[in-house]
Amino acid sequence: MSKTGVNEVLSKGGFSFDLCRRNAMLQQQGAKLPKYRKTGTTIVGLIFKDGVILGADTRATEGEIVCDKNCEKIHYLAPNISCCGAGTAADTENVTDMISSQLTLHRYATGRVSRVVTALTMLKSHLFGYQGQVSAALVLGGVDVTGPHLHAVYPHGSTDTLPFATMGSGSLAAMSVFESRYKEDLTRDEGMEIVSAAICAGIFNDLGSGSNVDLCIITKEGKEYLRNYQQPNPRSYTRSKGYDFKNGHTAVLSTNITQLRQHVQVLEGDAMEEE
Amino acid sequence: MRWESYNGGHEASEEEKQVYVGRSLMASSRPFTLMPTPGGPITHTQHPYVTGTSVLGLKYKDGVLIAADTAGSYGSTTRYKSVERLKQISNNTVLGATGEISDFQALTQLLDRLIVTDAMWDDGNNLGPLDIHNFLTRVMYNRRNKFDPLWNSLILGGVKNGVKYLGSVSMIGVHFVDQHIATGFGIHLAQPIFRSEWKENMTLEEGRKLLEKALLVLFYRDRSAINKIQIANITEDGVRISQPYALKPTWNFKAFKNPSSATPGTW
Image (cartoon, rainbow over all chains, first blue to last red; front, side, top):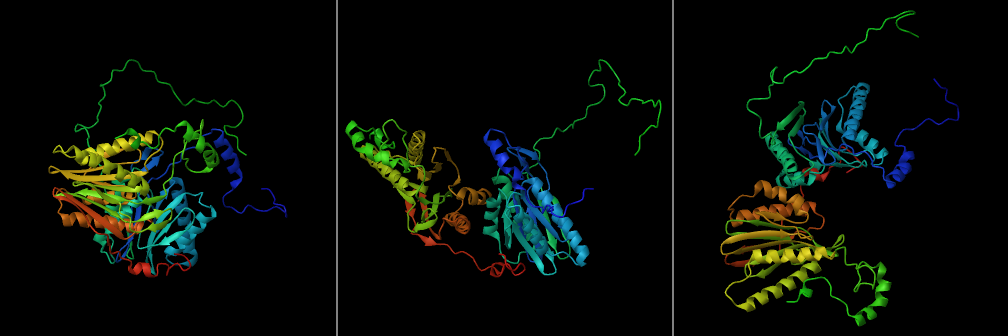
């Protein structure tokens, strides 16, 4: 363990911009930056009479390819708080995981149920510190002692507190559904209907969103996570006989078995050196 | 009609070039030049100045409905609030345009000459919406090939001999026909609504309500849209473009009154 000198300054964390100039120069000379996995995405949140409903699609894209047809975009933050994430998949996953751990520690320290504003403040101060380099756009929703809350968090660290919110590339399609159908004091079923209609608008009208609809309904009684609540894009053809290849379908021409594990003979000394 | 009327510029004679040389040398930093610099590149207008936002169209039982708001934006300000972006072209066609208003006005003048010439033939047949759509496609595509586009997305709707027609042409010449069409921001905000709620053989009232629903969403979410709209109704009997009227937005949600009560200091 090295001893830190009196004059040595400990690193303060936050984004280190040291390599940015070198990366920009390399890019100018023709080096290609690695493509990151984006979530494309339509994510939405809606406050109804008794709580919050969060919805998300399930497509993850890497450039023009769909790399995951059924990913999970609704992340766990606390037993009463969930967060949908759009933007770079790694950023949304890790930021929500980190804040989820911090919230657990906070619950142990305070002995109370987590509040949505706590998660909000942790997320926004983290994202602001990284000046937008952490590309995570989140829809945060939950119910705590003060009631149901819904917030939209942007990658640079600003937040919006709204009765209905949409984020991601499909946000305009989803917002058109919300703006034309939202009313106050929706029932649970009406809310679920509007949220899934909004996600379906994103799925069918935005190329970055697709596959299935996930829902998460949070009330003061608890959280209900409906994974693949709707599957409007089923595989159109599956072979009725199934894919079952019995032994003997392919002719075996020759067999050669190689032992992969070599038997080691210990001639002198101990079999394993230990320090 | 001379071909030169359709294209963006005309060939300069020698004395014209002499007169303009001095000016175009000075004008190298402007976004456009009147005459090309001799030996230099031709630079045409590449940005729009006064623009109109979305136009929406859909077919219903008796004909075609086209709607647009009446705003002319100058960059980020709403400079003109009574711009008619829907124009009757012949007795059975209406043209609506998104984008540069001056280019739209040039197009309507061009179409006017086309329709008058066609009427002068007096042969018992008149140009229908399909013909005008094809004509517009050729004009837009040829201008684009000269790198001097008419900066518009157009929606053309009409009825001829009982056949309802609704088509669209973009700035670069992409054209197609459909049962419901939107341009500008309407592509992102209105098309999803049309795709899930439009049905065949809607009544006039249902069609109007659907258009107004989409226009209200556009008013909420498009910064260049205003509350004043016009709807054009084209049927076999003719064209009726309504007077501009206002939509009724809802701003009084309880949740909008004090949104940051739980998070003081933010919004």
